[in-house]
Length: 413
Image 1: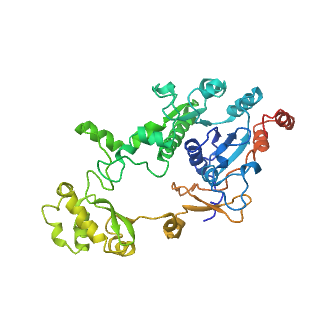
Image 2 (image 1 turned 60 degrees about the vertical axis):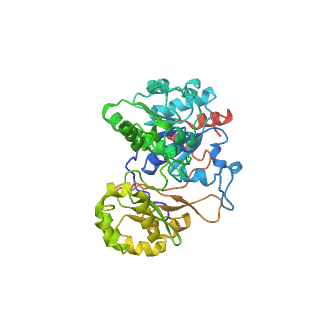
Image 3 (image 1 turned 90 degrees about the vertical axis):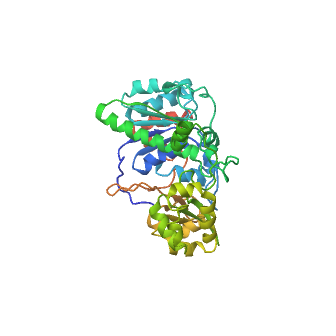
């Protein structure tokens, strides 16, 4: 699919100053941009360091040419870019002028960085009382709870480890923990931050009062692991790696097929009966050892051996034909499978975007949030470094002479 037509999004008119970097912060502002917010990415001189991260399609502009790789392209689409040196007094003064007309500012520096720059929340909210200031840090901001780890740097694996999700993920029950493939330690906090920003903006529109929105990466991962909390609260036993099954349901998880793996879920007895018939074992539906979920959980090894033995005799396509539409089922897809499957094209989850300098477009993941009147989505590629500096400053009331002076002083590029 090509980028979505330019239709005003649900957040049309919302002005967001984006001081984020790496993955978590830019993903949060990307979510806002996908729904129509005017996100202005404020980059340091030389641009965001993640512009250097690949992969780089053949011919694509590299960082020395103010370009970007696939990493940056995916999570910075729909944004404008300006460069601004916040270490210089004129750079700080410029940001304050932007803040005066903005609705939201998002940053994901370590605690204290913005304060050392003289641009902390208290300074900016005094400049614009309706500003929603959003911060995403590894262990949160001391304003809403001073963690003993507040000064620790944190990235995805740290959040996965300390937030609990790694401890319940592993190939086999009782085995070593496993890191989840996608950066959920970044992406889940980003999603919570975008949600928090939207909620705070709703209040600010009605009350005229902004506020500080704080998301800890570790807290967000723990929130995702909600089952871990109540299980331990009730039993006093800390859950461990669960393999590819489910501690409370059976059969529920991954099973081998002739040509790969499939995911099969039987969350209640209603689905067990037709599964037993599809397997050619109707007696299993009334056998007291297997007829109820509680009984199947107690006889987990037997049930999984029966189901796994049956799935292993069939291909993924054959299993889809027998189970699809009647029993919760899905083949395990590779990226190649996803690109070939019609679902993702129909749902506009594979979007082609321009990659400056490259002979062919770059495909990025679309937005899963679809709205009937304000559809949102990927409308345009990620920006080149400082591509919108002059036009953005002019829109915020800077005179041509002021812009020229800032460039001469190397405050902007």
